[in-house]
Image (cartoon, rainbow, N blue to C red; front, side):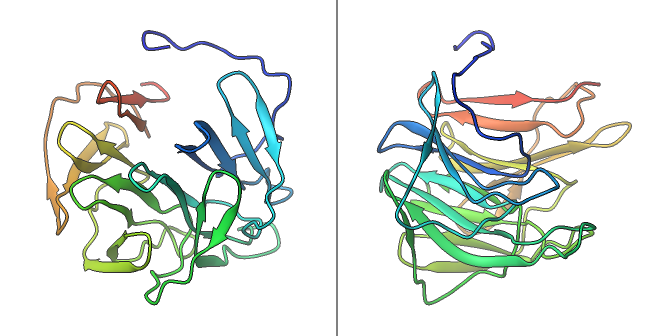
Length: 239
């Protein structure tokens, strides 16, 4: 609500799951959820959250069921972008089976894109909008278990992908969010006992490490950005 967390009790809701994709749809002004798994099955359903209730959508086209798809919003083009994800389980009858397909959500339907250049297959990649590049940035993720991140950073301009050498690095897992005050995506992670943390900005060409006060012993925090207040919100599991 801007000052505190408010619990919601929606009339409808998706099945319990983890490792799903979630991003804001600027066209319908709703949050879109896709995929995930409950360790018994992998989901391929699309849901929309309007701030009060969940609605299950029935788009004409849809990506295959998957876990760990990367999703991010392009506010300039008014599209939600989905990349990759895994079609299989680890330890439950199959491998990760990472994918390299690109989809966009136009507010009503999923559209399979046909780029000439395609990033390495991956699941659980980090993805966020870059105002400085006017593109979606994709980095890290995993091609297998244990964690095996690809070694390039990619930008999606709505038509094709462009690659750059290097990834931000740092402890896993991390978050990638748009820092609207700097106009650059920020990659942040903190993990371990005692906590080791790292932060890097993407300037449109390379990753640059940055520092700021982080006095908490919070493990595996997650971050989100608010484009209206230009604040970054951090949620962690405790010390």
